[in-house]
Amino acid sequence: MNGIEISRRYYLSSVAPGLAGVPHAAALLGPGSEVLGYDDEVSPDHDFGERVQIFYPGRETVGEFFTAWLGVDPLGGMTVADWLLTPTQILASLTRGAVFHDPDGELARRRAALAWYPDDVWRYALAAGWLKVRQEESFVARAGSTGDDLGSRVLAARLVRELMRLAFLAERRWAPYGKWLGKGFGELKLAARLNPPLAGALSAQTWREREAMIGTAGSLLAAATNELGLCPPLDPSPRRYYTRDSHVLFADRFTTALAAEIADPVLRGLLDRVGVHLPGTIDQAVDSTDILGDTARRRAAAPMLGL
Image 1 (cartoon, rainbow, N blue to C red):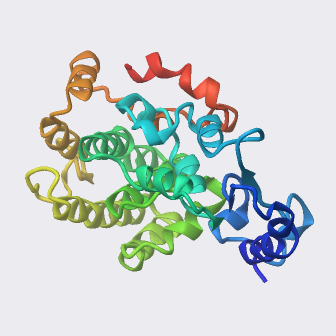
Image 2 (cartoon, rainbow, N blue to C red):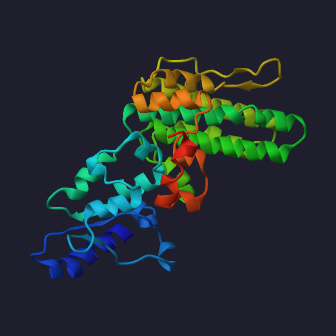
Image 3 (cartoon, rainbow, N blue to C red):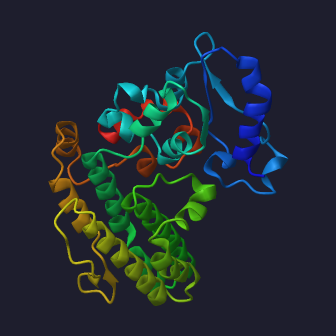
């Protein structure tokens, strides 16, 4: 029995009877592999078992719970800053899980508000994701060609991760944190086509093979980006890197095209301030667990994101 079902039965058999006549909502949200549905026989060795969140006035309301995780109650609307300062792993933990009792729709409305980015925020996140690819896509070949095979492998792995995160963006799915990134990626429709070249990039024995696999995966994601209709379509094929014996996507072409379509005044002002150096969302700019998991520290990072 998975963790969500254990918690559902716990609520129905042990918690709900004691709350008869008390207006409340009940759910299993927030941290925990079981919230994502990824728990297995190993999970019960810590932080696992019968648990449920109960919300009612005088204890903790639904609004207070979401505010604790986001820094804002999404029922009042998410600003550009609210979206950019919230990691996808937090959004996944609030929109997945399970709701056991929600008679007034307090949980449902907030979860619906967090279903996905507004289009211009989506464009911005995609633009920043493609920029991260551009910043290192030529390094796999450069490091490898100098005999630094380990460095080339590390760079390929970094690019694989960024391409995986772009796949989540392309499919409007919140990416989970690192432990479950591959598990969640396997659930995407794009995974069937992307997994072979991404896995090939990680297992390749030469930098040329590595570069070719990264190029194949990048082209597939570039085509998927074109299909979103968020910017004019671009040629998804890799091309020669200046005069070198190397081929890359020049991924920042998508950054430029996506950014040009953004009309939101807050994001346009941000783009005017940062120019071509898009820091992106908080989890595109920061890779610290202690910051991404702390609402106050994330919110304090607004200036770093150009907000």
